[in-house]
Length: 596
Image (tube, rainbow, N blue to C red):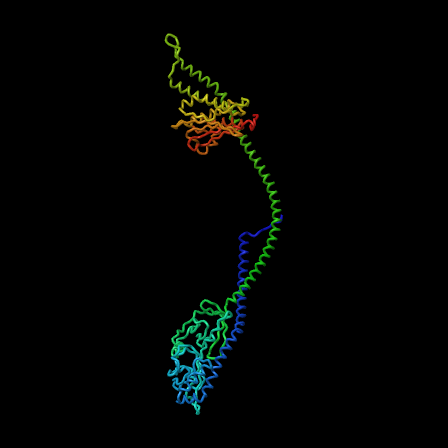
């Protein structure tokens, strides 16, 4: 027979767990690869999107940087720088500022003092203010074009400053012409769904941004030297330069909890860099799609494998079921054979036990017959001699008194011993005689009545209370009345003997029956049975009485009689004290009359 071995539940669970973990790791790995791929794709897209912003910013810076060299060659500006009146120049610079959409155009002397300005009529005019500390002034004073981004020291407004030296005929620097441009107008278009733009300077400080909270913040910590330089130049006025809550992970920038893909471009001026931040959510959304596709694909593969495995298991189960059915049939056949053997062995053991009991009783019967025969006549003779010894002796006149002599202690003791020996031989006669009475239909109520007629004097003498329950109902069985009365008498006598030492003496006799058996139950309030004697007391010569008060044959005889009737005799202790003996006999339709 082919055997099929299935995985244990624990092993199947382990395999499924390993498959699940492997699938999760594969899905996670695919997600990370997709994430890396889409970050690169987003960087490429950011480069295209950032280009227009860079072009626009560079164009503005370039345009205003080309203005200052032209202004530096203006004759009137040179005259004012050489000490001429500035009234007419102020009005010209005002018109020029409006035409070029610059915030201010102003002229400074060699010491940095403003001597002409387009905002000459404004409350925050540059006239009279000295800007010699600004780097753009210092660069132009040295003969170069200067440019700088800072918060205005006078207006407090940020701007882009570009300057150029003003030279005289001998090419000596006699002043500096500067233009301030407000670049905040560019920020309006720097916050779109496609991304966010901001500009950082060489120190990593954000100088232009569509988000005011980021402006003048730094992505990296500043050194003390850098902070000292910024403070001395008053680059950001009273604004506090603080580090923004930002972290970098490769090309992924996290600011204030929001994640972006960062692409940077060199502006080419002022050491500025343009940062284009595209929302990282786009990368995650596309990566999640890949993850879902991967999970679905893995799930389909797993389902296909499970279906295939289920088919194999189902086929194996069909084969296993057939083999199991065949095995069950064999087991049932073996089981029936075992049950038959057990039943035969049980019958054999019962027969052997009954045979041993019968042999024992037969041997006792032969012994009893011999003892009874040998002791019967001597006991009768002794009884006669004792009676003769009690007769009065002849008188002196040769006459004999009619009355016997009595009160002789020795004769009384001998008489009692002879009576005891006679009782013993009487009990032994039952072993010498089996049967002797034909079975007939008898009423157990009559058996109880006959036994009580014999035992009532003893019950009254012992002062026992007799209680009969349902003993008058008609219960017919097949058996010998006299022998069953003998059994019941023995049961009552044993109950009376057991209550000799108890204060409360109550003898109860019950008659019960069911569909198959009738039962006579005799219970007492005596000392009960000793441990383990429930079955031993039915063996010959086993007794619970004191030495010399019984041979232990009564219950053995009774058990033999009941066995002849196809019944049983049992004993047990009562919960409330005392013992009870149960005489169980089969009813006529179940009785098997045995021909002994």
